[in-house]
Image (cartoon, rainbow, N blue to C red; front, side, top):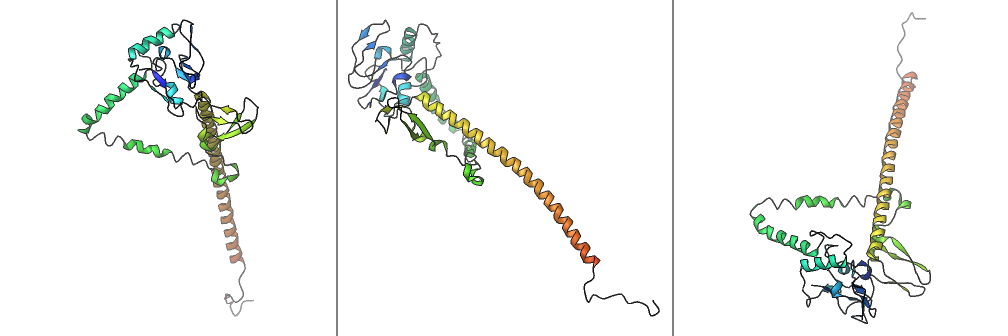
Length: 277
């Protein structure tokens, strides 16, 4: 079935650039057919999807790209237009004659179909006690703790925020004013308003992924630098302690030599013979 945008749409526009078939249009804008002819808009108030151009992203993604970025989940399958994987795949080939779309191209139908056998697998696997141990290897996923080991505790002045707490800079395309938003809220489809002119800004999925990858690379370099520094300092500390230990032993020998060299007052003296001169 084709995808439809419901009345919950907030007109953020995040879905439009994600469609591989240019099947999404802003409300009130005429849509273009594959043959180049123009047609009246299907909606004047909110974004809409042209069923004749929608392939539910079959041939391009294993999910519906518009639904993936929609912040209010208003891109849903249209129950009034049921369509099969084969129909949508053929439509994708007609819409993109310049591309070679194979039969095994990405499709949400295949993804959902692959999940079905998995659901049926548990009954058969239930007879074998082997599956229970399988989840336990997942326990090592608790390897997450290494992330906090950023070593900042020993150098608080150089501590950096967690990725989700980074302030992402935004430049308003209307007034050129600058402001920041926490990366935790910097998501595709979320609408931000400039505090200077109230102009709106909506990050795309590619923007969010770019920032996310950049933060991941930076944090990896930062941790690696601290780990190298800590290792170098550990070696230097070991060498320093070895030198100090040797110096301490030398000083103790010196003290023992002094104790043997001079006799304290009152110490018994060796008696000399009567005829000793």
